[in-house]
Length: 359
Image (tube, rainbow, N blue to C red; front, side, top):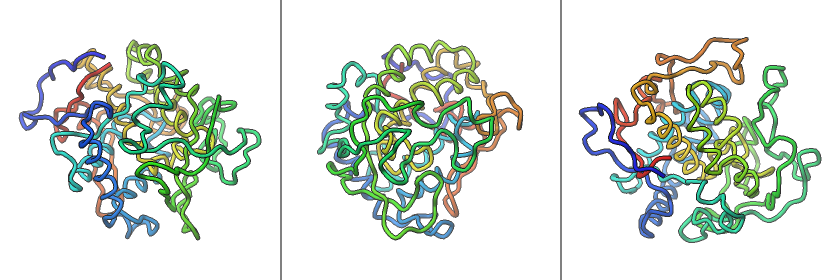
């Protein structure tokens, strides 16, 4: 990992950017403080409840907007700007719950856990005291014959089998190598966590909460989020290629599938933010984009392309994203809307943060 380069022409209002750190580089008390902040969000009223009645708290505001926007912000050009904005708003909510204002959303550097299955299973991210808990109990099944009703994996958005979706995957192709769980999250500070959201885009009221599930698959992480895979992504020259590869084939799905496997919440393209690990995973996804941008920042802070319509990389159904494409997060009173150009530099405009290190 390289030290972050000095920002080029940072905003005059960003004199002291807050720092996003890898989870294992936080002091023990900082990790406790972060966990308490997330738990605090789960006790506060949500801003989206008037728009979507199943929203129960402030934490679920971010789950709700992700579920409702998934079809418009994944496998499209604005995938990276959208999640950059989502994380920035999530950080504000963390700060309102006591998180250290000099620190941003921590990240999970998956490359540190791809060396061996033992390293993965013993990652501090899954610690039961200073992390987010471990795997679920094993439930048999595979993609062809799932034994858990309503399992979350799918190869295309719910209810859509149109041909332009078929070249890509939103869940692990074929089968999930070495999956080892599937049951509810049973240990750690978020044991027993549940939601009314899902599976996928389902937002109908339900008789009981759906538990957050874990279904570890080390092979899924190792094969797509290794240092070599990240280095290959860093070598891509254009944003359109970078987004296409990393959004659907490389480290982004790897982090989801490595934790979510077949039955896990993280594999649900829509409702994955129900698992708090989502935000550490996506902080590192953003870190990877910024790492790529800084290799040619003068050009890449203006490099935006990719389809406006999900999976439409051949531009059959619509045009490309541009710097003026709107990006918004939040439902109801919590909605925040910017343009792509406002989100291309992490120390300009509304953003003011840095990473302790880059790829």
